[in-house]
Image 1 (cartoon, each protein chain N blue to C red):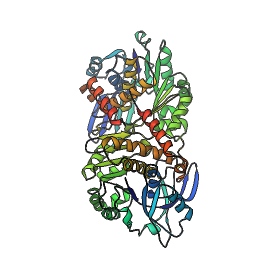
Image 2 (cartoon, rainbow over the protein chains, first blue to last red; image 1 turned 45 degrees about the vertical axis):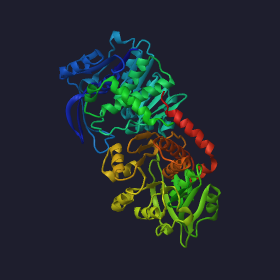
Image 3 (tube, one colour; image 1 turned 60 degrees about the vertical axis):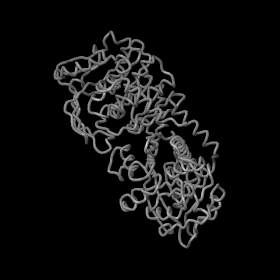
Image 4 (cartoon, each protein chain N blue to C red; image 1 turned 90 degrees about the vertical axis):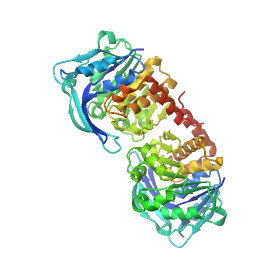
Length: 300
Length: 300
């Protein structure tokens, strides 16, 4: 089934103990699209400036991605610069220039409005709602969010939670949103705020899914050579949503498998800078690692 | 098969957001024994002072625990006092009085020396080695350790690692011991220092097992009502070793199941102060939760 993502497209400068990349291709919608494109054709909505390299547009178009929603406007592309140290669990943001992304009012192309699966990558809940309102009859809409929106636009975020089917956020954000230290309780509280499913990302510690009738926990795939964690969360979401869209329906069992696929997509993504790993691997590599991951966890 | 544990017996004063307990029964060897006693008879070696309440001795004896190795000597019992806040991932130690535990030179009773399974709870690696040398022909000996020994008695710890079959430590300690930020790499490095198996405990984030031929990852059982995390690590080790001793052999598959049992024992233990949960539940409750835990993780 059709899948659309709306979010940032960025030029990232990243420094980790394993090297540095300047002005690499990045952004939540791009990581999401690359991961999801292994499973289904992805409809991408985002904005870049005149400085956005043509080769990046070509690279995105070469994947299974429909760029009809990629706007090029006057100005500079969104830029993020950050560094990771030690266990690399958290980025230290060095600078953020919103540029053209700051005024972005996403207009969903007519040809995208019938999308069944919708992913609202991290952004203002107001914008996320406006995007969702442009969709005809989405089957399964999931939003990502972050501390900034929880702190500054809480009311709008709560409104959004009432109209999405799922929310993806990290452990610290789940605690911040609910004021609840226990993660299971926090996720259940968020579930009561509206979304059918709540996915809590815990980075190298895995993920948790809470729905009305199940709590599902999954460790991260144990990766040894973490080079650059940028985009892990969006790759996770891309793998999950891509898998769901390919299946075309959302059941308890399919959700669990979707989380395993998301986990494995994230595990590949962190093994190199920018989108390099996704350029090197095939769907077959993903399937193989998912099988290994599941057998790793199997207790008989 | 027979299982012996050598470690601390303590009077703990613990404060958490859910209450306070003064001079409760505690200590690594006690938490371990309670958890392991669901699976097999446990041989306990430890020391207490004259102030140790008789009712605690009776309580321990009422379980499936052989107290022939419980020494009562002149002086005061080991006391620990700590507090937990927020997500309760780490205790803030308020005070430690080693008292009689400070000079403890464990003498293993003759009747315990033929033990097949040995657990050396957290203690000086010198003492841990002396204990192990008193055993006749242990089948599977596992040690726990902590930052104190990694920092101050590194050489002795490395010597110990060469003669044990397994080591249990937490994520921070694994990183400290190896200087390696990546946990999988750190565990593999420790495995190369001697022990066949390395178990990394990650608290609310689960556990990881690395052996020569497998990496196994397990999330924690999602507990909502965490009242007091004291003893979670030792309850985990007790469940794991108790299960292994009951099986009588250590294979890859049995180890995985042992980790699941350890995880579930820890999940019960944190639901109340001191050893209270273990006093309330039966082996049946543990089996039931293990089944639920495994089905929670099952992806088909």
